[in-house]
Image 1 (spheres, protein in one colour):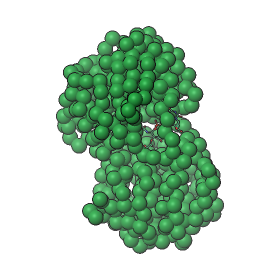
Image 2 (image 1 turned 180 degrees about the horizontal axis):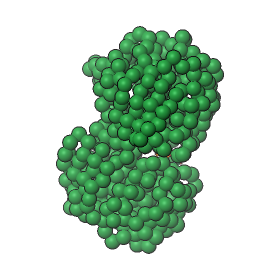
Image 3 (image 1 turned 90 degrees about the vertical axis):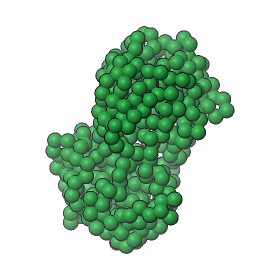
Image 4 (image 1 turned 135 degrees about the horizontal axis):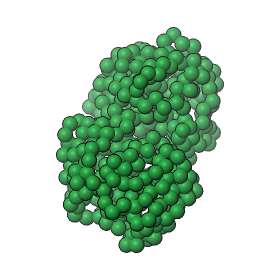
Length: 420
Ligand code: EPU
């Protein structure tokens, strides 16, 4: 088991290049199942979740050829089965995208119930609602989602809650379904737009992605082509938080600044200096006296839930009482016990965390990543805190952050990956 050993207390300085978006890539890769011909995907992040997706494609019979660490050629013209490999599917949350993609392709799908980060109940009832509206029969049998969609057809779907996964999954099923599917109360995250742009570039007809109403006119088939995945909003945000927590000065490159507005506006409120350029953002917190804040997570364009743990990490270094409300997931503060090991004063009551921050109360600690973004939060506190800390269970961090120790080392961090 690997762990990170961090000698913290040094401001991060320099430049960091952001990789392609994990949550776009893990949807676009299964979406290639709908394409006849070769797809070349560029700016794919080199992370564990993406590699698992490739394994799933290959297990279905698709050809996957890595062209470089960030590009891949996929040909799913010939597939052997509509049944996704159970051991692989059950290992990650995003495997649920194989349901929509296989359904579109074969009019049936069999995919194990998704695994992935655990922070409360993660139902898929809204995905099911969408497929059923499209005249499919959905059953859960032996831990697998089985969908029969012989009569798959367009439908109007009104989602009861805003769900990234359900929006993309039903979009995937609708691309090759006869008629026009209308998704209302759809999620608006940048990766939803990216998946729609990918599908459109391969011949689909999707309008309205990025708004709460998406219209998908079914087409006969999709053709091959090349597509470049957008930069990762959450990875970029994570480095912004690491820069601020260490009171550093970092230029974050290869970003879409618009996607980061919820973070930059909070940073400005706290007194972190932000300079936006073309595809880059400078975060300067050198010698800054940051102020406490209140923040609430919301679906895009609100403050992203995936940056809630990094925000709490930053707030442990900021004097005063800050309040963080989680409104997307039921129990996404489970990691707080680990941050307390650094001496952080955080109390959680349901979906609200009260952080009594003070850099001087923090001291190095041995902690264990409890999920991907919680792992990132622990790294941030370790980087900000003087002394040698260890973060174990980093398999979670590797699921979503490409070359993290190389990127942090380039910023002046003292971080080593150790095999225990
Ligand atoms: N929900 C339902 N029913 C459903 C689907 C979702 O009640 O059928 C609820 C969830 O329980 C949650 C809320 O709706 O309370 C939002 O869930 P959503 O479906 O939007 O989440 P997801 O698609 O499973 C994606 C990201 C998560 C990110 C959320 C919210 C991927 C692969 N995962 O999950 O990212 O937290 O959207 O933005 O895209 C991460 O990257 O670390 C991560 C966990």
